[in-house]
Length: 78
Image (cartoon, rainbow, N blue to C red; front, side, top):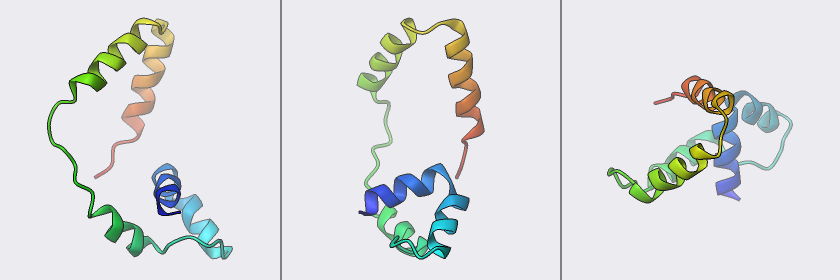
């Protein structure tokens, strides 16, 4: 389904293109872009999400917190 295809594409464009070349039944990249352009994204602070992140963060060790920040910094895209 298209949601799975977008998830795969968000993880790795290179892997997505590889699977397309191997004739996996995936939507073309323009189709994904067209579908994603219809998303209605709320541009406000999601306080419920912040509360959840806080509670999860309280359970993490310092090393786990550093790992999350380091990983997050590697995935900045437009």
